[in-house]
Image (cartoon, rainbow over the protein chains, first blue to last red):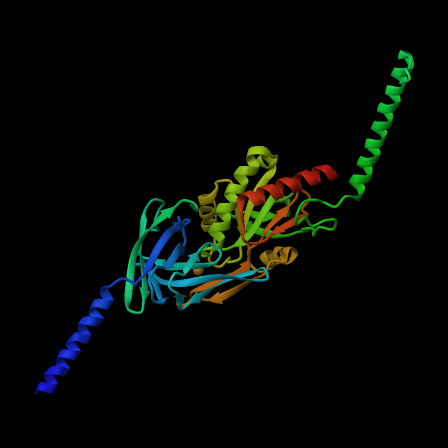
Length: 148
Length: 215
Ligand SMILES: [Cu+2]
């Protein structure tokens, strides 16, 4: 009986830990210089640009990028092979302590697909959720009519 | 110091002036015939030539090589479902056009043409709304089959359909260079990524000056 109690206690503790980490922010992640280009009419997807910095002391692995305003979201990369330009899905993005990664036009970027409502206009904000191993950081990205 | 009588002084001056003018003219002629174009990326002396093509314009009417004749055209291939490179380059082209319009003949003779490689989704109406979001003067066109592939082949543009994550969802891989086409349909430069408005304006200005000089 004592053993079961201890086991239940450990289970409860574990559950609390998981619940707490799900609600906590990505440790050390800072998002700066974030912007979205105002999408032209008819756009089915928008790209998100920003600077990600791991200001913490532990490695950070970004594994999701979503928005409540879009059906799907992911990390993407624009790649050029000769003159052929294409995009590919990036499953993980690792940031060593102190490392900074640029998400910029024509390179690594966040990709939000399937707008759930009217496309955002310049000056509006788009909520973005960056996930890293169960934790997540929420930021609001400003839509700009042009590159800052 | 020997003195030259005033009458002779005038003659000597005339002779020196005449010789200097002759030498300058000769040097200019040598420089002009033998010079290498100092325009970076200029396709010279044998630029590719666009011949015939027929696309459908954003007004639903045919858009052919005659729409390019007697105009300077910046041609860019893409598709409206393209979220990163296409809106980025169209925004850059808008700025480049503003710069060129401010101080060159581009204001009266220049145009920007967006060619969609995704005719299945990009109808003339969709294309018109899309490009005019960037600049009301931008034109767009697309075409099925030979219409599109004909122009693409002449410019060395490649494009291919790539399946996306969802059912029926797809993306297009494509050449994302800007083609600088002169009023006689010569492709004088191909500007690859990354695109920068100031750089494009400088290059187009230099190319226009070069062609004017050649004429
Ligand atoms: Cu993308």
